[in-house]
Structures are given as structure tokens and as C-alpha cells.
Length: 454
Image (tube, rainbow, N blue to C red):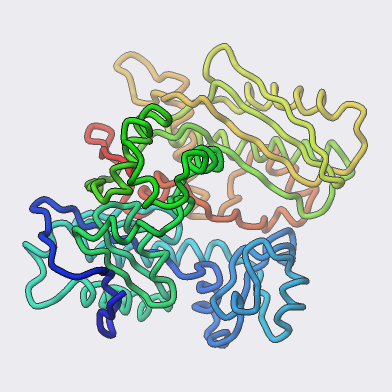
């Protein structure tokens, strides 16, 4: 690696010059550093310069879900038990998660990123991609990519107190690998024409989304690094893996030059996984919570103009054993009364003869289809009436409080379990579609954005 000055690093190897392709895409990946831990430090400046980790679980003292760089130097990683983290680093700080604050900081970060490129694609709560393909020709004059990204990073840090790392390459996947390589330095650029050199010694498991089965299959072909993949015949990879194999061969050879596009797909599933505040020995109390959660999910489903053909239910007990079942409707459903009736029957069936306290409940609505809530010329349809009711309820709860209007199940839950009056916020692993909606509002169905990220 050659030093790129104080603003970052430009990767290069060997000698000689190279010619930049005329239509080269340039994609920047920006990733929050140890995001949840960094958010806690941003919220409490007294934590600056100290090892910090965020604990999950019921009381925020289960396992570590994020640790800053100082904590990682003591061997604390995601998944470490919090009591073990304290043993490894007695002077460190355990923080209970504040998910709503993380969401707010994430939104502020993305609003800053939006000002730096014509296209921004949020990828998760703490990372996204920016299209720099036209910046050199039309925007940058007396600057470089390293200087421009340094300004971006400094502004995010100044306005949100969140440190971010960035990587620049000819595709989203390459930019993400560059970011991983830049951890600790802040920025790394893979110059156009040097992609193959950058990749050749990197293990294939670093590629985002590659599963263990594909890793094993590639290892059987002798492909442990991208350099190994690049030397294999492309037709062999196509025969073995289909179109993904061809894409992988092009990527390993530095020829996967994809544009960045914002794609908004319809949701295919809506789910909830909740560990109860305490192990619940009363099945009826657990059922009350389940029906309340099902009501919430069904309302969200209707607000997104969707309906579900199938749902699944899983109940985990305090000994970590669990039972599960699923149901398929003959026609897609969107009514609480229909879904909750079947759900209650299913819950009683799978709980029959079981007396262990309930620890966790998981509910998923899937095989989703569009729900038409648009007005008609002749009369108001049930879908339209329910859509109007959900919109009004949501608006009132936004103005008057999250529980200003409740269903019977939600009311019963709050009065039977005091902890539900201020329920624990959900961990913000927000789907991309919801992130886009939160940033820029609902997409225009007549002009949906298209595109993919390999």
C-alpha cells in the first residue's frame, strides 16, 4: 500500500501505469465504526477514550452486540458474554442499548451523506453506498476523492459525533471490501484498473453474502482467495454456480463494473421476535402478549397496503426448547379478527400439555400480496375503510402518544404487565425499504426505482 497523505490511503501494487476505463463506475461505501457503541459515546461524551460495549438481552447485560475499538483490543467481540467482557476489561463501560436514539443518529448521518452524491442507497442502519461515477467529470475540480471523502467523514463526525470509515471501488461489493480493509485508517480507494491486484490475496469469505456451502464448494475447486477464483475457467464456475458463478469470476478479475441503483422492492415478510421481560408461567398472559403483537403487525401490514397468505408462530420456553407451527390461508388476509382467531387456536394447540414458562415469542407474516385500499367510484370497500381507519389511528398515536388508541388485546396487555406501559424498543435492524421511506417518504408507485446490488 502506498500512503495517500493524511486524508486516506490509495491502494496500488507493482510498477507502471494503467489506463482508467472510459465508463468506469466509482462507488463509495460508508460504514459507521462500531455503530451502537459509537452512538453511546455520542450520547454521553464522558465515555470518550474509554472501552465501551453495548449489551443485549432483557436487561442489557446478556451478550455484547457492539464494542468500540478500545474494547476490542481487550478481546471483547460481538457475542461475548457481558460478564466475560467485564472480566477481560474491568475498566470498561457496559451500556444498555438505546435503540430509538440509534435510529435518530442513523437518520441524521444519512441526511448528511445525501448531500455528497447524486445517488445514495441506504444498506443498513449504519452503512450505505454513494455513486461517485460522475463526480470527477462534473463536480470535482481542485480536489481528489480522498480529500472529498475526508470532508464527508469530518462533517459526519462534527455534526453527529459518529466516526465512519469509507471505501471506494468500481462496484458496491468492492467498495465494501475496501472499507473493511480501511478500518483503523478511515479511507481506502481501489484505483480503476487495480481491482484484480487488490483482490488476489483476499479470502473469498470476505465477500458479503457468501454462504458456507458456497465457500466449501469453492474450496473443493481449490479457490480460497479471489486470486484462485480468477484463475479458474469462467465456464466451470458458471456450470457449478450458475449466473452467480459468472459474476464471481468477473468480480475476481476486476471486471465486475456495476452501476449503483436504488431498488425498492415490495416487502415479502413481516416478523417480530420478542423476549418477554420475564419468563411468563401463565400461558394466558403469553397469549395476550401474542395477540397484541399480532394486532400491531397486522396494522403495519395494512398501512403498507399488504396482506398475508401465511404466518408462522414459534414459542421458546425458559429451558430454550421451543415449539412452532404455521398456517396457510386459502385467500390472503388483512383483518385482525381473522388472523388473531386462527393464531389463538394455533397457540392453544401447540401449548397443550406444556407447563414451562414462556421466554420468547416469534411471529412472522409472509407470502405477502398487495392490498388495494384506493377509493372506488361505487362504494367504499372493506380494504379502503380499514386503510382509512389505520391511517387515522396511526396519525392520532403519532400526535398523542404511541398508545393513545389501542385494541382490546393491547389494553389488556398493558394492564396485566406494567412493563408494557413503556415497552422495550425493538432492535433497529430496519429493512432497506423502511429506511428509504423514513428518509424520503413513501415511493411513488407509478415510478418505482429499479436496480440491484450484486
